[in-house]
Image (cartoon, rainbow, N blue to C red; front, side):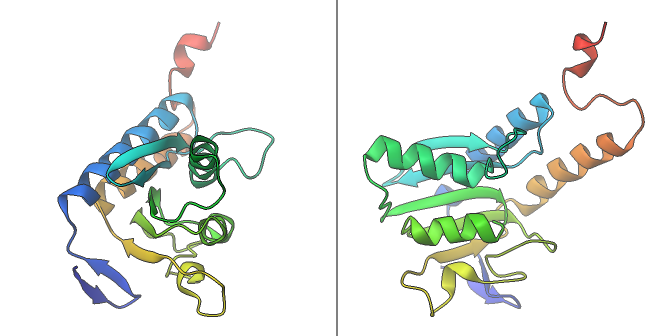
Length: 174
């Protein structure tokens, strides 16, 4: 285990954390090429990726990367109870996603970048480790944080630059 600092995040990560967060980053990059906010996630059990996903712009306000992989993982395992599973996500989960992790009985949540606007795994709230709830998840933050932040910054930089395509939009225009 790593050591803790300020907000209760642990640093000092293993190779598995790096590998699985790299896979979540791959999903985030795929989201960015579609024009979606680049947040990616993977659900892992016993060293195997059970599900992959990313944020998707739809009419569904729950279409976050974390929700996508929790749903897929539960479907694949045939149960809502995901004990022994770890969620790797490039951005700290929001309250909805952190709550879904608790309700799914995840063993752990590992994230890349902290979210100072909506982070609910230690930054603004600490839902996964709230002792008032019936289940708690281990939390590790800051895995490949610089890479996760840079992808988000690039996405929003492009969005704010007038006329700059975010993805393959240029090919779609007549």
